[in-house]
Length: 145
Figure (cartoon, rainbow, N blue to C red):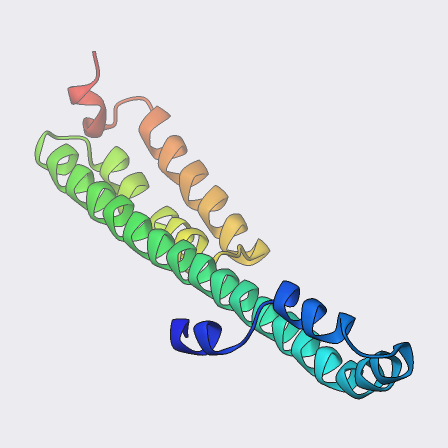
């Protein structure tokens, strides 16, 4: 691109050349140059729009990948926590960590949307786990302090 710029004269050189000619010639030359200048302007606008669109697509892709990685780590951490808590004698807490909340959080981070049905299922599962844990005489409360 620098080769093209060095071959084309700059505006001062063109102005000095046209200063030697009568004004009628200058008017005709400017009328002839106007379509070319309009095409160059359109080309610059299209390039700027293309660059903005590419930048937007890059940001969107990075956001999607960030959600995918974040969702993966949250799901793995919750499942690991469920296994650790389950081996410590707290199955109700393990059920809360490995239940529908894992699927709900994975959907939230990966798909970037929530569904009301999944939220209702999570709330019902957590309520059932809490009811089970709060029952007197249940052996699952032995790990609580």
